[in-house]
Length: 624
Image (cartoon, rainbow, N blue to C red; front, side, top):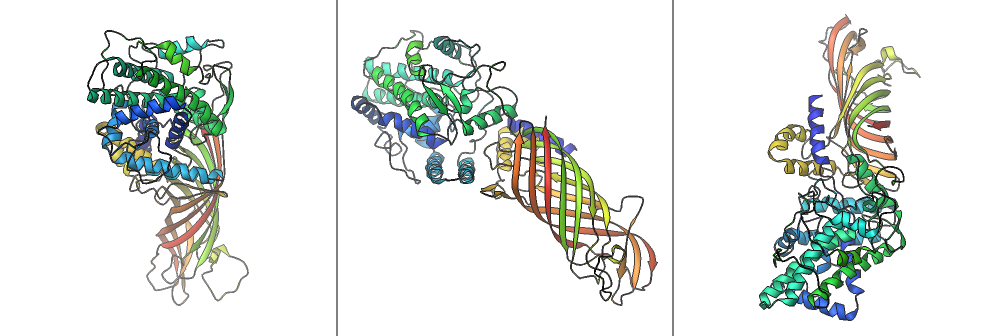
């Protein structure tokens, strides 16, 4: 049990950084593109001028047009709309984002992956095709951006804070979200970075500075604004409107349920909509979100053109550099002097969040994350390559049943629906029927006689262990305790890869219209001990002259599943029921206990038997 305890510690470390995306990269970019495309010509012309300044000296990396409407999976440049997808999910601050955008090569690969995901989602006609598209994208993103799944901290910066009372007014709610020392949330992040973008734009409009300084100010302002807009877009995702609280399972389950199934939402201005989220963006929601994004960018344009004046704090130095406030490591909003009314004008078009936990609160859902206990039953059939005797080479078949209790830790679907972080140890009882092959082949019989079966019927103690792994089975058990102390981020990245198919992600689940398939070689092993009871297992061993000896024996059967098919799976609040089919190979290793009767002068030696088997099993788990 010590190794299982260690593994669960690894999982708990991973849970501290569960992904919490609202929209996938191409959706963030699409909303931003719509916002810029629907601007009035005069605003678009001024914005294009700002972009021209921002890309001065960065022409090789930034696209000539502020938005690039041609979809490519071979990026050499990035447009402004792509910054909204990079912000927050692939960077932790505007400054970090700009270093990534202008200097890194991996971000171009991320943009390629985002474009391919956009294409794949557009082609997806069934839920399974959508699941596979997201799975492929997440696997590729994790390779391109090694911090992709572990970048998020323990805060709620991507989420709306829940309302504390039914009749809370918009301005009062906005103030609570953006006051100094407030718990980080999506509106706080938007207000903080949008305010800084406006202050930079005002310096650009009012101060007498060099052209190089103007260019730097606009580059910094656009970076701060892109970071702000990422969180502004987040608040239109259903899983972020309902708020986040409870344990990791409830936060993840609620987030995923509403993002996929949607929820009716109302903006502060009274507009009704059905909001969805994360890979389920609809044109209606995109247009509503784009309206707020458009208004935010137009405020930036107005300030940069001198048409709008924002209040400044004489003690606050406004740097041209993009902001360094880290949303991944900070939990509270720093002391702020925000332009509340200007920001509120943008936020009036955002959804009203749900009430805080309690009466009238939005129902919570769980995901398959956390400690569970359960039961498993199975029927199985094996084809055997001979018997235990040296001369017993005739193939045979054996059927059986088993029943087990199990305990474990679930991490299913942490990054996407194809993930498999299931960990369990189970034990129980197994009963095998006699081998269909008889020891005397020249004795015709229409029935299997257990007494003279090559392997008589027998019962044993059955155990099974399942653990994801990074590169080789059991590697996290060995590396986990050490890395948890010296390199926890590395351990988290290994855990993410493990539950999503491993370093070479060939063990990631594949969704189809008839169920889910997954290669699982090395993730699960079964062992059955026969002959441990007071009544010894016995069998006849024959030599080449058909002379037999009666021996008692013990054996250990190892079972290595390599392919799993799940046609039926149901999860409801706190329990899972699953029907599975597994294909496996194994070996049965015997050991003689006693030679009871010997009618042969030959030395009695038992040999291992290799087998191929199939199991149909029913799995039930209750999560605590």
